[in-house]
Amino acid sequence: MLGALQAREGSVREMIASATVAKTPAEQRQIILSLKSNPSPEVVKWFDRWKSGEIFLHEDPSGVITPAVLTGSAAGDDSFATIRVTDGSPLLAADGSAVRINPKETGFADTDSGLRRAMKEVADLAALADPDLTRRIRAIQDSAIGQKAEKLPALQLLRTTEKDPKAVRALEESIAIIQLRSPVAGERIAACGKLGQLNSLAAQDTIRTILMEAEVAKDASTIHAAKTSLAAIEGHVSRINAVGTVFRGISLGSVLLVVAIGLAITFGLMGIINMAHGELIAVGAYTTYVVQNIFAAGLNISPFGISVSIPGLNLPAGSMGMYFVVALPASFLAAALVGLILERAVIQFLYRRPLESLLATWGISLVLQQLLRLVFGANNVQVSSPSWLSGNWTVNDVVFGWNRVFVIGFAVLIIVVTWLVLNKTSLGLLIRAVMQNRNMAACMGVRTERVNMLTFAFGCGLAGLAGAFLSQIGNVGPSLGQNYIVDAFMTVVVGGVGNILGTVISALGIGMADQSLQQYLGNPVIGKILVLGAIILFLQWRPAGIFVTRSRSLD
Image (cartoon, rainbow, N blue to C red):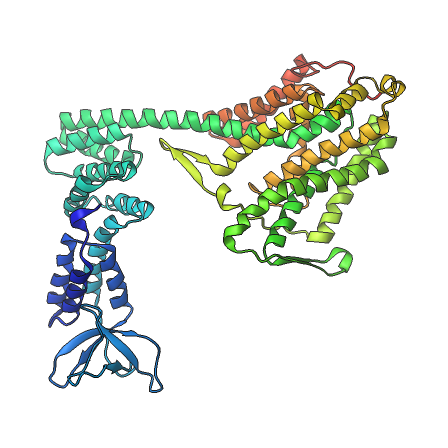
């Protein structure tokens, strides 16, 4: 694919061998620099072997010096078999026997600073021929640094053979950046136009420098071209910021939604002010941590001073990414189980006593935090993201993180599942009946205590799912949930207590407003303050939230 930039392996080895035995450093540099006409990854490999002292110079009795490299394992006298650098064939003595070299007794091909600089020049160009697209594009972009005109021929030659659209764009950008320093005015103007057409963010500062120089020189044509190019790039930056703000707003809203959806069940539908909701989120996050360690080497914990060792599966790195798939249902079940115990032990006695439920669950939250500290320690624990959540997509210079895209899809899935459970299942029918009129439902034969128990466990399980995801975007510690509990209550109240659709709209609205104000003001703190102030004013106007829900109580 790269045509003339690729060197035949045989010719590379011959050139390297010739350079190692050249009589003077100047001749060595000349031979090395001659490889600039056809650099390749093979050249870089032999440069590395040369610089690391792996090429030895064997001199036979007649005085002929042959560059060779060692092969095989050492014999009893610490000698190795050898092969020629030129063609890889075994190095033989005059009588046909194999030549063995003791590396401690044979000199190797040395390098000096001038030779290493020559090697770097060739290696920089050889990177342009790298078969790996990512490394090749990085080398192309790096070649524009310093705007050195001597790098233009190789870039222009590669441009005639390169087929990948991303690499072609990088080539055109690097060529144009270098041509900004061209002494020919026409080339400078054309380069400005090309960079404006490409919306080159990398060239923005360089074009500003060119503009200032042109203004000093009163070069009207270059001034016009530079200003036009900058205007195009700045417009592109504005579009990037707008799209990025929308994406960040939706992703933040999705995080709020994932955190608040469980609370929309326990607080919105059941009327329980559950201050331990944040700790249930932490339970889900720690469950993810435990599952991760079970997939790896295991986990040692010391609850109440008792050492407990959980064995691991010791799965290879390639299989570790699947731990998160297992962690999601495990987090839901763990948090739901804790919620079930909480409802049976405390909450069932406090359905008609909201103030007492607030105080009791606040105390429970402190107890749960301390339990997590006793089991896992007070310090944050490390939860690694699977490879399929660790990268990003870059579309027209807008970066979409995979983990943020995942949370958006995850939030949509949770909402769909929650809606289906509440509206398309017998359990959902019972939940809605009990929450609308508990006494009437009991008269109709509905086992209200069991429905209350399952509803509360379901809401707590959703909190556990939120914890599983939050473990991928932040630190996991005993106080993880405390960072989100206020935002969760705020989201539910603004949307309308008991209304799932209102919670969705509230989460997305708060997320968009927060990110938009941060982008506009350039100050995250002021942006959050203004959002909070706007929420307070909104609730003064509509105390019941966006959607008013009536007759939703346990009374």
